[in-house]
Image (cartoon, rainbow, N blue to C red; front, side, top):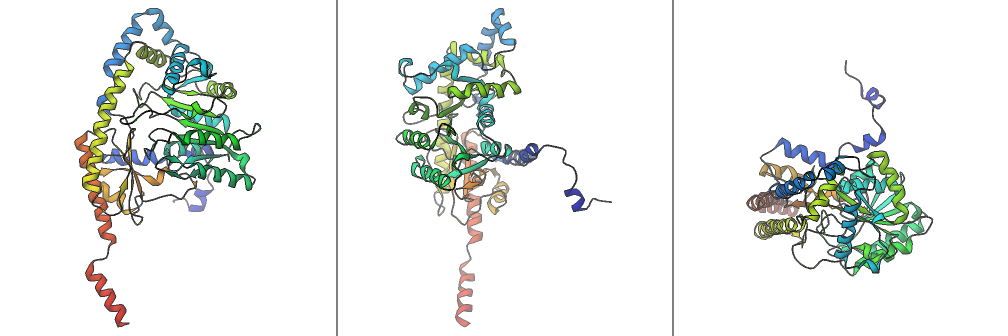
Length: 452
């Protein structure tokens, strides 16, 4: 005899509360849809281009590494918790060069660099280190939905702060912090999370003039007994196709006590290598490494030695330049298709990004692009898959805009991108048509009203 609903609701839970919260992640639902319908053109996956993966560079570097028996034995052994020191030193040099800060102008040291298994591990470790259940993380709205899932899984609160075409709005951030202070809740605000280059999902890069403002605002509201950190996710920095690079938020934090930088080789080289890193305030290095020691006491050592060899042999920059050329072509294909197929539709808007992997669409307000809305299924019927923008909004703060879509151009070749955008435009037109009463119906309704 089947269990009653009351019996099932009181049945013992076999997993932890945290494991329970981890269920139903958006990425799982989207992957299930893609796998169930392999014929779909996926403009959803944030993967890198399969054909651009650095097979030859990795092969050359691995042969070089394995040719030296002493180096090979060291690479195949356990590594240190913080990571391979020569790679960390190389990353320090690269970071200083990118931000334009000679070693004589800052106190940044290699001891503040920690290597991780991709930047997601770094983000998770940071949350485990500085946050307790119920604490608040402010986020640009919209923001990286996988990070939002991690916050929810840890029992944390995500609060959205308004953004525009230049990134998070400083006045909105200041007002949000003021509001929590007046409510006696500022002590629960522990961090601000931002993707400062070609944001996932919006593709916005935080404007240069706003960067020192954001650091100053956070430092002003932060107190020694309850610091507020800025978690700066720079995963897409290398993927710039037009315009000039700008320095990180970390470059406007000379004391190094406020900004935490998360970076990775997953987007610029290979996600399979799984090498990411963090630049931490000195006070967090020990506590974070203690957390890390409970998980892996050293992320994959062989991969770190491999990446160091890639850099030393001059194999990294040529690959990044080829990647930029490939993605620039794909982005142009998506924007050209948007101009051709989406522009004629009323109320459809999008940004023209300077880099990254995404284009952010805003549809007329009456169009629900969410997974339970009419457009999502209509788009799949037409043969295309996208990420509903509703997934990218924190659970509190800025209202969820259900008429938004994230499109990724990283995976598909240009011709498939064009085809996918056309299918999406057809689906949007279908939904708009179905929402608009026909002239005959409108006339009939007017006559009925007059007769009444």
